[in-house]
Image 1: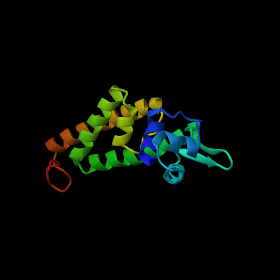
Image 2: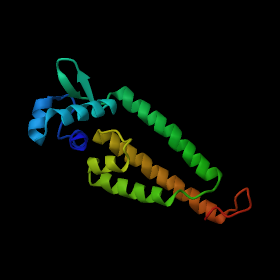
Image 3: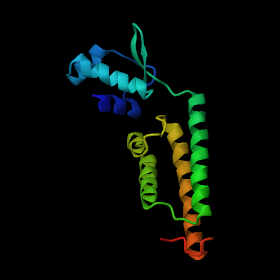
Image 4: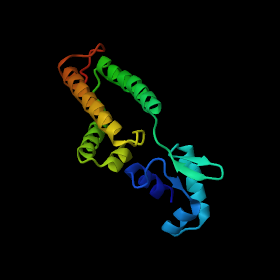
Length: 163
């Protein structure tokens, strides 16, 4: 129940601003209202929906301020990670390169549900995802430069950066 609703919100099948009624959802999915109610509470905790007294649940729309806060936080964290990798002349983890490839392909195919499943922190709006994928491409390029530099130059510990 929860996964179906979450995926429908992320994919845009259930658009931002729409009100969801427990009875309507339970009828579509063919379950009682109890699992729907539990799913609503979990979705509200994860900020996919807002629970409004006497109105039901409303699919949240992401505000410009929320997007800016997410991007600022990610820039800080990802910038620090790149700096740490380059400073220690450490190649990025193998899974990171694979994940970035999958994210790029999903973005190029405009498969936002697939892209969001690869990184659960991605915002759900497709325009923001395109920007995020461009940022990830830049991250990959920076890591590639850092890992090729680490193969050719010894680290401060006297070891090669490749492992």
